[in-house]
Length: 476
Ligand SMILES: [Fe+2]
Ligand SMILES: [Fe+2]
Image (cartoon, rainbow, N blue to C red):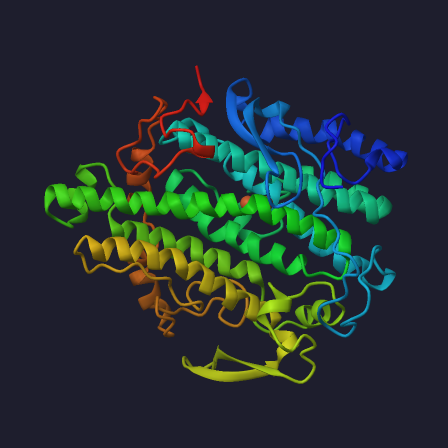
């Protein structure tokens, strides 16, 4: 079961050839996907050889094969993690009952919306990163960008398979729409805000991988708990690929910090201007990028209190990450959740809601904890170099556009402040036009094997045990 059939037009481990109607429908969608890839993907690099990994199985060991591929020839396919025998529903009102192999009619539209929203983020990110290849800081990084791009393309396939296989005509129409919306498009934007933000430089790219792909990890982890077993299995396998995206974000930002510390040591100063004269990223600048992408990504979890979250949990549609191992009460019928909300008079008050209604917030809290891990690591680096600068995540109330704190001006610590003070202090909190201008000036393409741009340190090791100076992309 684990092995994937690569002789099919669409590689898969779901016995696609046994369902001719579905196979034909997906084969009909395939050329549209390729058109989209050519138009919206990293099309300027269509003819270059890239050292990529491709899934060849879904078991924990040896699921990936590495080799040189031209991106349009990447074998995008449909891979589900192996089924867990006798799996039962892990949470909500139907706790303990057998999982579903089909979507129950009454939950159809909720499932469809969740799958479409998840599916929409995958091609969106490819569109956002469309031009980054031209300014890569090294061949190693260029390869990682392309690896992420092809895998986000595969994640789109993962969601499109579920739509086609289980949602009939509605599903097929949604699959078309996934190729029709575009990131940042005025008429047909992507569904979620963050996925319409441009990613024009590699500092933003690494922040996106660190913060926004991590939102993806948490969404996939909660869908991996779903009672609808095919969706759970799809998401479980997607998580295997997703881990690399967060690795790219975390190590990318860590390498920027390392390079900055080297420069600070060389010049014996932490003066941002002096650091910039040496072409590195000063830490306050990095902090402003973190503030921007973290606060934007927090909104992806939705409102703190949500009747929709309560329904999806109660009906077994979407659980919590690691539901079985992380929580004792899987039903949450009587428990409550306390959160801080604005009191309407410029202060903060406590609000208690039923636990089920607070599931978005539970998920967001788990996400924030996970985001802290990288910061701890980077702060250790900074401390070891003898500096007392500390990178911090802003409060989850800062710059929110969704939920209880939407449009409530606060400082980075989450203290409510006046609108005027908020506007005045904003240039110190988020990347200013001159910050962005400076970062853009650093974006010069480096494509000599093993060489790195001046603003980023080399990685500790290469891909798949190859040396760092391996020619991961043959750009010439
Ligand atoms: Fe993805
Ligand atoms: Fe991703």
